[in-house]
Length: 260
Image (tube, rainbow, N blue to C red; front, side, top):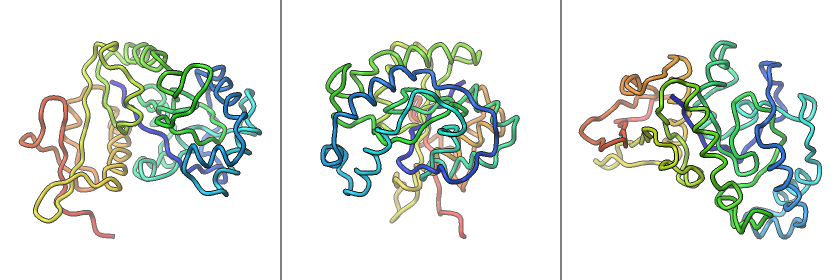
């Protein structure tokens, strides 16, 4: 069983990593090609493409210009420890044990606009390049065209290695569009998280993002390799609802956020 997450815009390269173990990204050459295209943009171009402030555009222009294809702990950080934001607040990767990180390395993948597909311990230099941007590059008019079937084919190889052909989709729609499930020929389970609001259960983005990270942590800590165990998930007050679920869209409800 393999779980997939989206990346985060917020990064942390200030905090020291909790492990020295690391691996090299699988698609460094492809990332280098995208960086080459990105370097043709000035900060104003980046600001227009990403819809960000001048400060953030300048920062990301500098990141592209400083990016280099040789990765080490001196210029990069393990992806699961570098990403921050709501999903990674739920995951709390910095508190995982060595054994749990080893399990995550085999059973968790992070989709990425620049790096394609990252394992948790893959080193990553800082960047911002969302998958859904209309970013013209050597491979097409956007990143979906650039990555083509590469991400899906690699996921397929990694799924076989787990011995349980099930993909748990904890990614956003923007990133899951880079995966082609029909080519995988595996069961895809998509957990959905809904909170009670004004008498109805609704998906609230902030809470749902964090819950995806909490569920990824649950899978890692329980060492789950079969989907049945997901139905026992009780993280942050969510619980599985057979009544609200349909097919492989498994719905988890919460009646109230935890206090404090």
